[in-house]
Image (cartoon, rainbow, N blue to C red; front, side, top):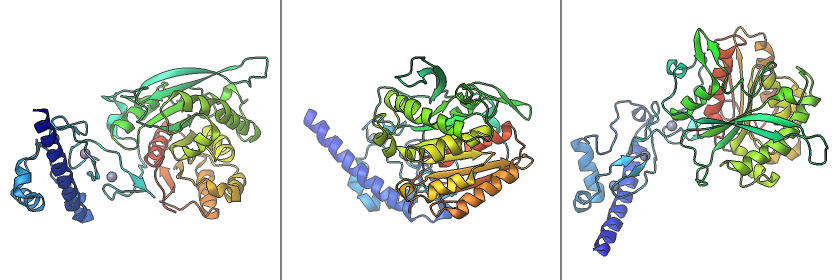
Length: 405
Ligand SMILES: [Zn+2]
Ligand SMILES: [Zn+2]
Ligand SMILES: [Zn+2]
């Protein structure tokens, strides 16, 4: 009895693999425009395949095999009858649903283009989608982390606070599933709640960042991420243009916070050791708004390029010279940038500063290529929460993407 089952399962798996390969070929052969056609039918049990498709598949795998195929019932990317996993080789560009199992699969970007559907990254320049202002059906959770910010040899223990967003379905015991790690840095007035729980008003509608994180992940806009918000004002007296304090804060992130997060959570880093962080840097990044954008430059790119590969500047790019020097340094060749993102509001007092800063840095640095690993958006906003939420959204679209040299 068991043998028969095993044989059947083996045959089913073999046939399914053959079918998936042939299916992939069928999809692969589709021209770009057809893949973008929303009317394209999803092949699963609930969808009726057309005569043509059935005949084509029969031709490819043979009548006999076809008849004995498992009629997959897909649940979350796996068949609940034969347990085969869907490979999600292709998905619909708009809804990001896998053509085979129907699951929402994030775009898999290389240089801003999706390998699964051909979609080229298009960032939004107006307000977030309407539904983002309502609670998301799948909510992540937020933890508070109190950490010792002082070095062990110092007598006075200084405790700082950060907040950690873990997406819906995060399972601490599931070490196979890795998450991108992004530091989200608040502006001049703010703390660890600003880009997490604190409610902001956008054109008369309420939103907070954790809800934005929920939706971006729920919609499959990007790979799943852990967002960490900090309180820079705990360390540095407000220094809107000063570099030293911000760089010192970069050291706190590098030496204290990053190792704790890498050890405690399922990031791409195997451990908190600097070599592990370096190996995981494609999946570690920082994005900040306003004064937080200046932190992205000093505490991110300039101090921590070797352990982070993604940087988002939402309104405010200072110290272009420092950035160009850092990226032009031969040492930095080992550390490519996966995403370099800039944004400002059209009526933002920092529009000129951000635009010209972005253009100058990208123009000077060979490794930054527009629309491949460097992206910029003018947002229909001021220096306000429309801008900061949209900037965060756009940055997450490309954070952690693959790049081809
Ligand atoms: Zn099945
Ligand atoms: Zn699938
Ligand atoms: Zn795609």
